[in-house]
Structures are given as C-alpha cells and as structure tokens.
Image (cartoon, rainbow, N blue to C red):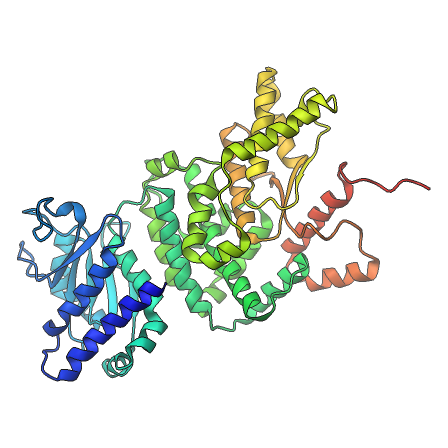
Length: 522
C-alpha cells in the first residue's frame, strides 16, 4: 500500500537524519523514530494501538517501550493511560543497530520482561523478533523481520530512504501490524481473513523473484488441464497469486474441517504440515502438497509464514468464530475480505463481489417454480431426474442454495428416513459445478462439505466422497478428443495424476450426464 511505503520512508529518513548529525547516542536517540512509526500504524488498527516510550518499573525492570490499546487510555485524556495498566500488546526492548537482536532475545533481561508481560518485541531498529508463548506456555520466537544483514548495510540503505521503503515498505509494515495485533483475540472471520491475507502478502513477496523448477511443472500442468496460458507479466502475477491463494485457502479450509471434528474445548493444535490430510478432494491435496512439501517450502521461503499462520489459527476463539461464520456465506465473511486485503487489483479483475443471498435465493426459487409449473415436475429441483450445472460456480453460492432448496422440499414431504441419503446423492450425482480458478474451487468444496455435514448428510472420507464440483475449463472438454490428442494430453499431465483424474471426471460430466443434448440421427 502507498501509505505503508510513506510510513517506512519517514522512519528511514528520521533515523538517517539523526545518524548523519553524529551527535546522537546509539540507542536512545532513535526511540522517537520507532515510536512515530508504531503510532502511525497503530492509528489504523482496531482497536487503536499506541506506543509509549520508557515504561515505569513494575517489578521486571524498565522496558524501553510498551504497546497500549485505545481502551487502556483514560477517556478524558488521550495522554494518560489508566493507572495500573500493563501494555496489552506487550513491551519493547531496543538495542543499538550494532547489537545482535537474536542474542538480545536470549538475554536475562528479556526473559524477565517475558515473564511479566508474556509478549516482547526485541529490535535493534533493523532486525525485529517477537517473543510470545508456545502451546505449552513457554517463551518462543513467533515472528521475525530483517531489514538489513548488518549495521553497515542498514545505514547504507537508510541513506536512500525512498528506495529502502520501496523494497521493504509493505511487508515490513505488515509484520509490525501483525506484531501489534498479536495479543488481540481472533474471533471474527474478517479478522482472521486479514491475518491470513497478511501472511499471504509476505509469502507472495518472497516468491516474487524466485525461479523454482518445481513450480514450473505445476504451472505447465494447470495450463494444459485448464486450457490457459499464463503469459507476460500479468500472467506471471496471476499464476503466483493463484499459488499463494491456493496455499492459504487450502490451509484455512483444512483448519475449518479439522476444527469441525473437534469440540471447542479441545486443546489440540493445528499444524500446517498435516493440513493436506484434511483436504477431501484429491486434486486439492495434490496442488497443496506440491507447494508445501518440504522440498519446496524451504526454497520458496514459506516455512515461517506457514508457521505464523498456524499459530494464528490456533489462537482463534473457535466458538465465537463459528457462531459468526455462517456456513454458506464464506464469500461474504472470508473469501472477499481475504482477496481485498491480499490482492485488491486481482479481486477487481476476477469480479469477486458479494452477491446478496436474497438474489441467489430468488434465482434458485424461480428455477424450481419453472420446473414445477411449466415442466410439470412436481418436486422441482428435488426430483431425481433434474440435473443442475453451474458452469462458472466460483465459491459455490448457487449450488449451496440449490441443495438447501432440495433439502427443504424433501423435508416438507416427510422423507426423514431417506432425506440424508437423497440429499447426498443429489450433491454427488446431479448437482454439478465447474470452476477454473483453484482458490474459489477450494472454498466451494469447503462450503458444500460443511453444508452437507450440518444437514446430516456428511461426505465420507473413507468412501472418498466429494461434491460434484470440478476444477476445469467450462469451455472445453464437451467432445471426446481424437486418440492422438488424448495421448498428448495425458502425457502433459503424467506427473500430475490427480489433475488428470479431475479432468477425466469433469469430461465425464460434460459428455455423459443427461443435460447434454445428443446429436439426433439423420
């Protein structure tokens, strides 16, 4: 964001100017520059966060700074914190630019601060390390950010603040925002979407200039399977954005499905390394697995961002989250906010906008009415002879409403004994969707799976059941390929059998289900 670059540039300018006077001391003279940066960021947070330099001793020494939330300040005076408050977002330990932040983080003084405040941001102005709690309640380094590899390197870069800010502005400030929100409870889907989008932005920045051979194979397989070409700068951006979205949506979907199998009181912890086991669709398991495999996570620089994302997911108040996360509205509550924060330009290009449920409900109800009144199909969409296809299903809003409508019709007929079975059969064999983009494809399967689970017709992992939504190009595959083209197509996907199987299943729907009009004999 432009504002982030401006804040970072002001920070670097401030430190540079003080350094170039030659009259400042190595640590304390720069406090104001850091405080200004944190306060600029804190004004945009909810609740707002304010940095206070030089805290009083509350039994663990004098922290160099503390991060207070707005509600901790007296309503009558923004200059005075409520008496007795400790900083809700932790304390700050600051050292000169020549010190090693990681050594400072292991010091006895930082240990004392951590025991008192549980959250300590350690910095030398160029390196930042956040120390919090692990799942056992022990101190752990949660997130870190490096602006320069050495003191000399830092001051050389700070001499050109605009260039330095353009290089680090967005990802640096994203890191500081997450740091200042670290102790905040995560209970709303929108808040969680922001955190994951923030990690995704960091991941996207890291893979931006990397040429990873493994990703070339994924790219070629997707291009072949979907009939797309990721050409030029826009194509490259789209492909890399798709990879990152798939990674973090896969992580989120796996966490949702993992959470649904555990009571809210469970103390189990979610780990991204096992996330692939919770994704029910083989092609998504393959895509996600290609990216997060140990051989690729390291070269892509994604391991710590995935660790951070898992840590955030593990501190979600699941009871509050799932009360707010009305299943069937993941676009409104999560997908759209995520894409807005992660890649607003791509969101605009893809047309990811929230469709009011009233419109979806009306369109589905209208189709049901036409089936009943004009085609004399008494049960409308619930009739086993009716097939539904959404050729560009996105996140599955219309398919979800179709299944809801079928459920209501079956229930009104008193078909309680067979209701779950009939509803599941509809989801598996006659309600279909095609989607060309992996990220919304992930969301659609998550939403449909949760809907069926809530309606008493859960998909079986043991039987490898999946909803009838396929990752495919709706414009291709309606006619069988000639043998030579079929052989070439299969050869292009030899190393990606799950994607080949996905295309075979999608073509089976395109070529064999009853809605397809067959050519009449002359």
